Length: 323
Image 1 (cartoon, rainbow, N blue to C red):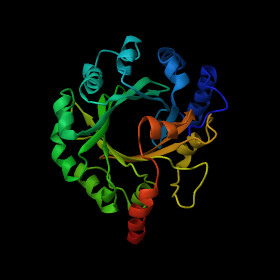
Image 2: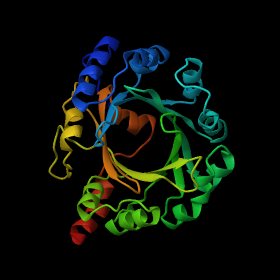
Image 3: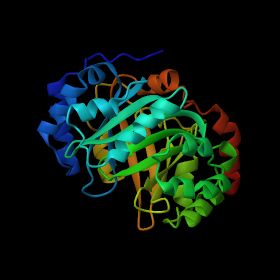
Image 4: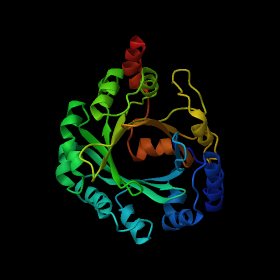
């Protein structure tokens, strides 16, 4: 059942809450770009789930997101509204080709940086094998095609989402992460193959002990590089505001605690943690619900299995044996 906020989304309150949050994070805040986003996507902000996102990287921005599930090219709408420019046409073409060629695809969401503007658009690709995605979407970077052997070797052969990052001029490809792959050995071996920072045993435990039934690993690719830039794995539905003794709660650290205690319209906001690894550093991301029921949206609109009944019977017993 969908949880309904007692207070409706109000643009002025949203801007006030964001201004307060950026001060706590030491992040940028440009009111004119925020108001432009609210104007271009007024219906979405008032009728769709809204999230905030922050990272452990000092000086990194505050992101706000609207979730979506309609086959409408929101990137084209953003372009018409002047929220993104024409200087990186491949980012615009990428989202159009996904929506045009992937059966069952739809616009899944838009991310904005409070100090930058529109940062990212991402679309649901359907349950699409990576080989087929590369055939259908010619605007993907060659680095995605170059990585197919690596991806297959590690069992990352089915895509679900692809994003266009207008802030960093890259794309993210999101893969399903099967339960049998969720081990410390897999995480550390994959990091070695990617040439990234290797997660410690403690970080591996944080990742594995918080997994839901649906698992996801995302890789970042560039049109200027011939191999992936970094990778990230996600854990949804972490009950920071309603602790469950059966679910591990990783420590957030000072910066993410600011977001943890930020204003929200949700009585019980949803939390998603993510761990990112590049050759030079590792960091953590936290996503927190602000308006409307993110959990309901993921379960019903996106058909994402964010329960934990299977991980408790398969992943956690294996993890406890390893410890």
